[in-house]
Every structure is written in structure tokens, then in C-alpha cells.
Length: 441
Image (tube, rainbow, N blue to C red; front, side, top):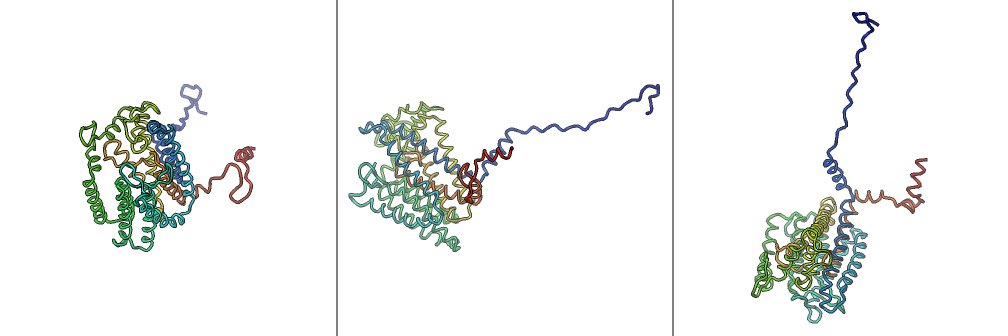
């Protein structure tokens, strides 16, 4: 090896090693967003949102019904848990209906459309018969079943319009008839107006507004042109103005819109004002469960139409935002089911149910917040009332059944195997822990 000029030892040159690239640090927010997006796009996301969201709303509603109805029950010389026990019984029956509806095939749902419509129309006609219909708060929309149990047939009219309208539009779409305006409007609009007329005979305009929203939702999903949609909306708005102008009670509710203090005179706005008081006194986290002050005779219908106000007073802004988030998740899941299916009946029915629940929730919460007139409709799955809870839970079962019918969801459900028991082909299956131990061995 050659040496240096001075005769010393040879010089060894350092070998430059290639630089090792440092691991790139990932943005935690971007990583969280990616994981959330993957979880959001899973096939069973809508299924879990519908089932879990509706269950949480119902359970929280039972808690708030028990809290908000105790004083009212004691004032009526009834046990403090009277309304809670009735709501719990209705929720138990509704759970059975939900499970049955979630397991029924789509063909059976379509077959039930006409019987449910016929039964709803018959009961709504029966309400107007003297001696059978019962008047509650100025509206004759109830039928007494004996004792303290009453049924409001107009609540089942919502479910009937959704199923029958979806089946009707799906049949016409299969025959390619929806391109003609007469096939899109007839007989859907006349049948809806018949139901609206039967409801308005009893004076319940709040339920009529929900039914109108369902009709518009079905027409929108069917692809009604703007002129046709605007024409039906103009007719409905004109009828609504006439009905409001001819009723002093409805005019009084409209006059209380945005009121913040009780007024002297024929219109005192007592309920609307005390609903605002309940929300304002709740703060961020509320005064505590059961510690509401407004339910002590100050706030009428604290456990039914204005239960959201009691929720705001006892659970605060955190509680009300939680309820709104649950309804938003339920609405998103319903829209997702309607948007990803190829079955026209499933699309119309899922869209109709979502329109029904979201429109009713917006009207109820808007009235409590003073943004909309008081319409007298309950908060879905949350307020007291078995007549409203039963058809709503059956409708939730419809959404669950439709979410299960999605091809990707069916594949995901089929791939899930039980921890113990038998395989799907009939053979025995060992526990997963035993299989893992064998693989390690």
C-alpha cells in the first residue's frame, strides 16, 4: 500500500455512509381524521348509528320523563312514577315492534302498506264519531281504550303515509311513470290531503304540518320538478294561512313567537316564556337531574311538548347539545341509507321516515327555543306519549332493516362469527381463544 510523502503510514480515508432518512412525523390531527373517516365509511356505520342513537334517545327520554312528570302526577293525586311507568310500558312494546320490523323483509313491509293505511283512515274517521273520540287540550284526536289508556290515530297516519307513499312511488318508478306529472301527484297528493283533512277536523295542526313535510319529502325524492313542487307548496301554505287566521288559538301561538316576558291581555305567552326561563337557568351543566324549578307548576306540559326545556334546565347546555347530536346522527344515518340503496321503495321509505323524525324534532325544539310557534308536537322518542312512541319505534325498525339490506352491510354481518356455538355451515366451532393458542403453539 503506498505511503505518504514523508514516509509515514498510509492515510485511510473515511467512508461516507449514506444518510438514513428520519421517520416522518405524522400529524396527529390528520391521523385522527383519517381513522375517523375510515370508521365513518364502514358498511355497518349507518346500522350502528340508527340502533345506538335511537336507543340512547329513548333511554334518556325515559329518565327525563320520570324527572319532569313527578310534580304533575302528584298534583293530579297520582303516584310520582305514574307517567314514567306508562312510558316504560310503551317503550317495552315499542322495542318489540322495533325488533320485529328490523327483521322483516322488504317485501313484507310493502305488503303491510295498504292494511296500515286502511286501519289508520278507519281509526281517524272513528275519532270524529260522537261518544268515541276524546278531546284533549282542545283537539279531538284521541280514542279511549279503557281506563287511562288513549290512542291518537293520527300518529299512525304518519307511518301509513310513509309506507303507502313509498310503495306507490316505487311501483310507478318501476313502470317509468314518474316522468308524467299526473302519475307523480295522483293518487299520492289526494290521499295525503284526505289524511290532512281528517286530522284538521280534530284541530291538530301540528300533526298536519308533519304530514305535509312527509309529503314534500316523498315528492322531493321522486324528483318532482320545481314548478310542481312550488305549486303543491303554495296550496299547502294558502290552506295553512286560512287555518291559522280562522283560529284564535293558533293566532295567539303565532303572536307569542319570540316572546321573552309574560304579557297582559288575552295572550299571555306563559308557556313560551317559561320554556325560555328553563333553558336560561340551566347554564352549561344544568342544575342537576331532578332539580328543575319550572316543572313545579310554572311550565305547562313539562313532560310532553316542553320536555326539552326541562332537559336544558337540569342537564344544561351539555345535555341539550347531546340530544341534538343524537338526532343529527340519526338523521345522517337515515339519509345515508336512502342515498346508498338501489331499491326505490327503500329509498322513498327511508327518506320519508327521516323527514318525519327530523321535521318533528325541529318543530318541537324550535318551539321551545322561541324560534317557531308552539305546534303541540312531541319530541320523537323523547317526550311522553305512547301513541307517538309506538309508530316511531316501528319506523326506526324500518331504518334498521333497510340498513341491514345494504349489500356491503349484509356481507359484513355474514362475516361476523359468534364466539361460541356453531359455524354457519353447521359444524362445531371452538372458541377464538383456543384457536389463537393453537396457532401460537
